[in-house]
Structure formats: C-alpha cells, structure tokens
Length: 162
Ligand code: RP5
Image 1 (cartoon, rainbow, N blue to C red):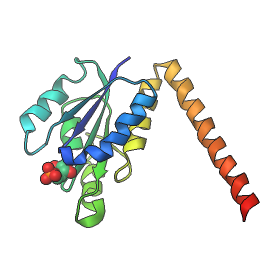
Image 2: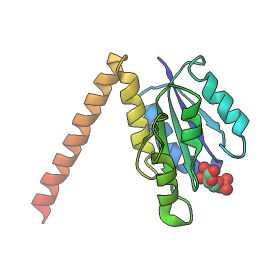
Image 3: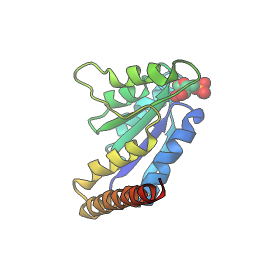
C-alpha cells in the first residue's frame, strides 16, 4: 500500500496532526511524518515534494498556520493529491491559514479540510488510497456504519432521558 506523507510547518502544529496520525493508525495505513516549512526550510520541503511519488507516497497531507503556503508549495512539486489542513494560531482564529490554504489559483489544487481538521484529512487520504485498496474501502464503510449506530444510540438515550 502507498504511504501517506504528513508534513507540518512547525512542531507547534503537532497536536492537530496527532489526530491525523491516530486515525491513520486505526485504519492500518502506513505514513511518514516530517516537519518542513515553506519559508524556514523551503529546499527540504521542495525536495520532499519532488521525490514523494518515487518514494512510495500516494497522497500528502500538509498542515500549517498563519500565512500557510506549505500545502500549495508542496502541491507545486508533485501531481500526487495534496490535502491542506489550515491550523488555528493565536490570532485571526485560523481564518488566515484557511484562506492561504484554500485559495489556490487554477492549476495547482489543494484539497482543503476545515480549520484544525486533522481527522477529516486522514479520512480523505484513506478514501483516496481506498480507490485501489478494496480492504480500506471496506473499513471506511464499516466506520460509517459504526458512526451511524453511535448517533442512533445517543438519540435513543436522549429521547428516553428528556
Ligand atoms: C507556520 O507558522 C507553522 O505551520 C505554524 O502553524 C506557525 C507558527 O510556527 P511556530 O512559530 O510555532 O514554529 O509556519
């Protein structure tokens, strides 16, 4: 199975990526984690992106906050799908990172999830890999059913209680 590349702009983004890592682990999906910054280590970020396909990655998740150009910079060097996670920083509630990540000009797409959307980034990456991995597709469907049943149980409980 191809790997998911997880790239964060700073170790201060790790709490958000931890949810991504936990979700990938729960599906048994292989991953590799790196800190590459589009402005602090642009050479390393570009090298990673350029070699990602040859190095066995199938999709890349890039997370950054503030003027978050990491996902776009990674996407520029590869035709692998890139999922951007805008990270919330101390100012502007993450709107800065959201706009920087989602507003890519035509030609270089970044599939952007919600601000701090670490879980959905993992699920989307698994959905991409599942196109050619039937076992992953089965696990995704099982998770949907489990999530549905959890809500239905809560519905019954709240109806009985209130
Ligand atoms: C971005 O700047 C990082 O992705 C992080 O979200 C933000 C702040 O980085 P630190 O100053 O905490 O290293 O590049």
